[in-house]
Image (tube, rainbow, N blue to C red):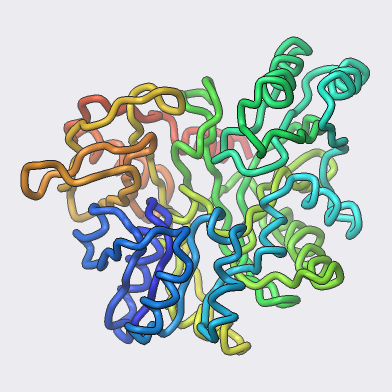
Length: 424
């Protein structure tokens, strides 16, 4: 097999590396990729995610077996539709199906129509009306930009003032451009969050092992929301009964609901969930693998990822086997992220055999074989072990040995799981 992965981040690095582990895979191309991927034998193709025709021409020229789409933006730009129109196999949702991530309002409408548990909400494009609704409901309350905002368009407002400021920024000051031209004001849900992903082929749903992401920039869940500062799997404080309930009440109704809506879903469906006192409820849906969850979840997959994708594209039953190991990934980010951050710092390229390095915001320096920071989330360090405590000790030992000038990271990834597991 010759495979094409579209995207350039740590998620795509993990997907490509997992694909290369299959002996039947001859070559994995990543477009545009990043130079850190080359250390794992991934071939970079200098074609932008937005250049659909260029990617189609490349897939035809190289006789690509199938293409996998990593990020949300090309999905919402209709890359899957364009590949299918050209007669090329590609794994991912259509432009219309990807709206389950592209519009918070659309996702909420699907949930309401299919009795999928989620927080109460209303949508607004008028600032005055939104603030009147918030004043009536009180705080805490959640304000979300309706469209894509790179994981940063969500404000969990603990006070009315914070909520009003968020509405002002989105609807009046255009903080997120068109993505924030409409906001969804949502009930605050209390409980433990977890990420449940699944391979989906229309009505068929194949859940993955769960993970927990850390969205806040700093230790103890402080600071602004980011695209994710680390993740771990398994999540011992979330029982299998809750996971089974989420598959039954969220994933399967969502897959069927998308068919009923006329937008059948094929690809990776991501449910961001919260285990409330009333059971699991949906915070958000994504139409692709999560980052940084992918980097830990795929390390618990014993089956071949390419064989799973090939089976789903052929409308066959995939063989999916998960292991009982534990994986923790810690993001190294540029100082200042998610605000204005530094660039150009030298990035580590060597680590002990026990660790895996997944690169995201990196570029090649003028000096040979050196990588430098070129984005907010620069890379992720991952360690797999027999349990979370051992994996956590291992990943931070590795990070302690790295030179991290101009980079910062959270020092508490996995703490909550270890603490809560003792209490259970």
